[in-house]
Amino acid sequence: MKLVLLSGGSGKRLWPLSNDSRSKQFLKVLESPEGNSESMVQRVWRQLGDNGLSESSFIATGRAQVEMIQSQVGQDTRIIVEPERRDTFPAIALTATYLYSIVGVSPDEIVAILPVDPYVEDAFFATVAQLEHTLQESEGKLALIGVVPSYPSEKYGYIIPKNDATQGSTGYREVSHFQEKPDREQAERLIERNALWNCGVFAFKLGYLLDILASKGLPLNYEEMQKKYDSLEKISFDYEVVEKEKDIVVLPYDGFWKDLGTWNTLTEEMSHQQVGRGVVTEDCVNTSLINELDIPVAIIGTNDLIVAVSPDGILVTNKAESPRIKEVLKAHNQRPMYEERRWGHYRVVDYVKYDEGNEVLTKRIRVLQGKNISYQLHFKRSEIWTIISGEAEIILNEKLHKVKAGDVVRIPEGTKHSILAVTDVELIEVQTGSELIEEDIVRFCMDWDEISRHQFIS
Image 1 (cartoon, rainbow, N blue to C red):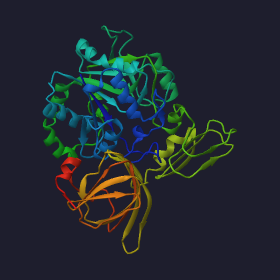
Image 2 (cartoon, helix red, strand yellow):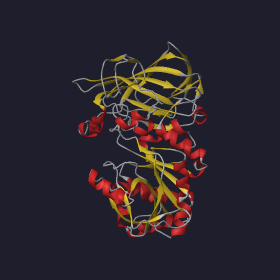
Image 3 (tube, one colour):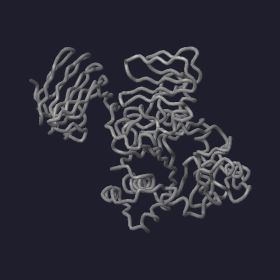
Image 4 (tube, rainbow, N blue to C red):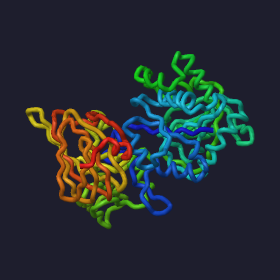
């Protein structure tokens, strides 16, 4: 069985720490068994490894998240890249063509789809592993996992079984229908019928989905699907496939499961109620501070409050009202002010657009020891790098230079450049140009060994 984690999201439900490139699954606010900070995606990937499932796992994501996944999970992680964000059916369709035409997975092999951010115990992944046998034993078209509800929630969709009878060695049930986010009274009645929370996990034979794609006239080749991707309808896999299928079984999971999709639910699982610089006075009750900046934040005598501070903004909200953030920010459109990359991370320190059209952007960049940025150039901006700590090698138009703290490097428009951190390196980058966007980049090569073959020692 192949496992595919879907990694997407607009980055607004946990703003300002999350943004278009750093969605909620990348926030390092949880604690690993060793006491280190870890993100949701790191936690899930660790749990997959602990349960012997990571070797058969892939992550499907958009281009903006690739380097962050590599930074947090590893360079060798198998990633299926969406050309653009188009909802779960297009993402899973693209995944199916990748597994079939690139990896060579048989149409008879079972594929399981999971969200990248479930907050669960390891027992959940033992249930995931049972999906393969459940699908084979039941001969169903789809096998889902349903969480046994611990209370009548209005936030989750429900899977309603046909009857109380369990079948097979795994104890699966046949599915009658689905109910989207009911009110409390409906939820109570659904639970009386042994309905289960829909946690977004399902499995199918690869050939099942390939047949659906063929019936829609869609290509089964990955490269061809990429070319047609922008024409695919933005629709969820639930609406397009699951709710139209009559032959579905569900495998109950009776254990801990939680959606950490809001500040309220996330702070409930944080081991410390203060992360970052600041003071939360002792008379504060159920109040959380998460501060990514180097300035102190003081919270005095408050109850049920969340204060989140990052380069992208400041949020102050009552915990119960925190889910409203996505609606409040519906019209908010700002470039990400913090990003993790495969080589380190950067934060935007300042941005100014002048009346005459010229823009100036200042970043604080950290490149980790032994890592390098790609060999690249820009057409619409020049850059000035001021090295503030560490030692590095820089290549400018095929010439190698050694730099250290205090050195200043000028990179005019059209100059090929790259940097390799000999030690951890911090630098201030000042960009000046007519349009300062991340898309203004031409990459020639990524690996330093390959880059160094382009240069002449000066």
